[in-house]
Length: 298
Image (cartoon, rainbow, N blue to C red; front, side, top):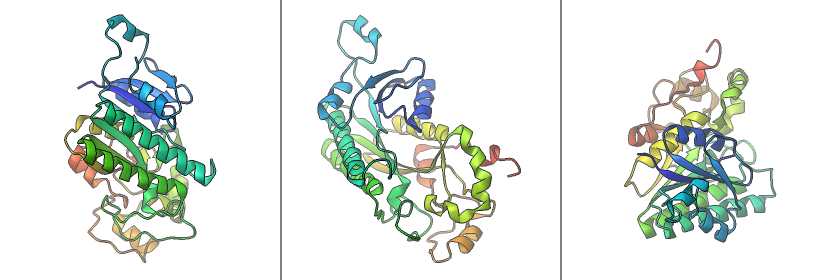
């Protein structure tokens, strides 16, 4: 069913693919960002999501000039998707990364809940698993990486995402709203598959991403499925594609390139070490963009 969605951060690397995907599924989207998104039918509201007042206004405004024609004030918002953030370490000072990412998420969830919006999807991250921005060569605790893993990042970005998940859980318990956190993997845009031969030639270079990725368009599908799936309360989903970025079956690959890390269940075939099994089983996710489609000789 088509929904009216406020999407924060729709002009970013992931958002500029996810927003068109949602529009293509019939949803009406208002982008809230500091820079415009050039997509037909999507207005961008320039707003600072670290300012609580701006967030409350953004979630209770007309999406465009057409809204004035009804004479009934702004229509109800059905869902909020919160992707706005400083997207990694080493862009801003660490304390600013932590401040922006945590305060903005608190503001968005609080405003949504208090305005009666019952579906919220937030961007968490693969960095919560603790290796992506770790100091030195840190091993994962175990494989596969699934949503019940003891997440333990040591960096400001990953730590902000852990806190955001806790914030989401608190508001979901308090309000009864559905709040789903997506642990988004390494986002790959359509033009970036040219990097994969290099990934395949140098497996250790992909350890920090757990040899996994998410096609930006498949991320759009996951967000759409979250919007369609009601009644789960607080949930965490790994948002990644199905398969490992390697040409060797996963169990054999991990024995060679992660020999110190225990494997807690059989990982069949080429299943990604950062597993999307929950998204497939609970949401019905079916990837459309396996990297092998785009890499010659794979």
